[in-house]
Length: 153
Picture (tube, rainbow, N blue to C red):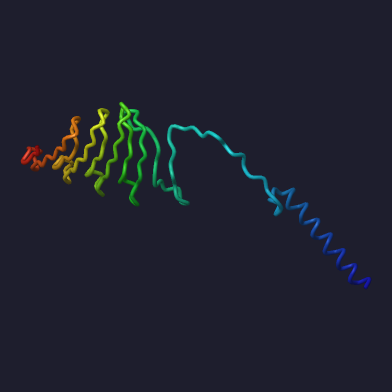
């Protein structure tokens, strides 16, 4: 019995010493840990969403003209989707091809008129669909030189 008590004492002392050393050397305790304080407001000029290796996959920032934008990036790092707010508060959504050319542009003009533009691989507008300010639909088809080939109405 005395031997079991002696071994138990050694185990308890070794555990206590280990716990003290762990805390002194900067270890983290295994008991309840405090959560970091909740921040009600986080402000910056640019936010980036990165993966574990640090590669950026999205950015919330301002473009060169000072317009707020949210960009999503492809595996290669080029922008594939941009959601933006224009100078007068008009929203737009642009989709890019793998070469970085804008191919689809969806926007709502400041006057409230919706617009959808389709661009070829050279970036030229080839088709446009929208609603005029009076509510009438508009469809325009253009050739490779952006010359109107068909228009309704």
